[in-house]
Image 1 (cartoon, rainbow, N blue to C red):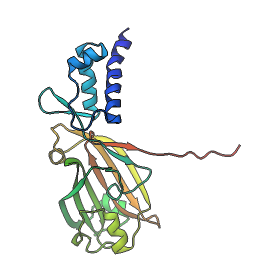
Image 2 (image 1 turned 60 degrees about the vertical axis):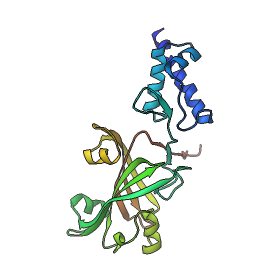
Image 3 (image 1 turned 90 degrees about the horizontal axis):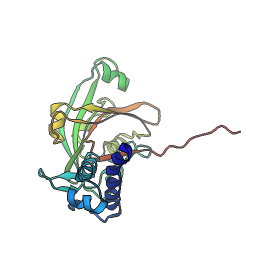
Image 4 (image 1 turned 90 degrees about the vertical axis):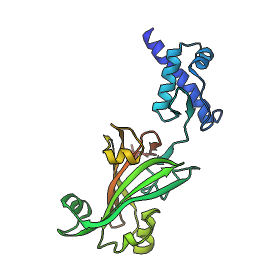
Length: 243
């Protein structure tokens, strides 16, 4: 009996999520109140509250600082199997995106950076940090490193655009493969502040190394994502040995 009751809030959550997905409830529409949901689904107000809280945890709803809840803007759909550059893809859908430069500079590579990019001691690298807004909401911060020798004058270009395009059009270097690790982590104070998150702030970190056609590393870095603005997916095909 306890398990049945504990699943009731998920049934309520699923129906509201379906209304959002089908367009019955549109972005920024008010969600039904706890009382309205209680009467509609014949559940307790506590169950209705759990359903609303679950929607908020999943990024499907948000509050206005009071008790009212609203439908959130659609999340970014990032298909990891189809692109090595989120900026160069259509993952933002109909949402308008903007890129802002937080920092950019040329520095001497440390041991880890040299190892990642297969550089010799004393090599210089370009570093840039960018904030991406989707539908005027902070989505993620990207920090990336590339060889200054291989990409001279990179920071003189407009890097408020997909840098992979600059690599190809100005340097003749094409991105063809990507190694990525996704993990959850607690963000630093500066990352949390830029993403407008209250501390302690947890989010998703994408560690990414991009390779060219000769399997040489082009760049490596991290993306720090708010957990409520993105959905990551992959289309995976399995190869089977013939019988």
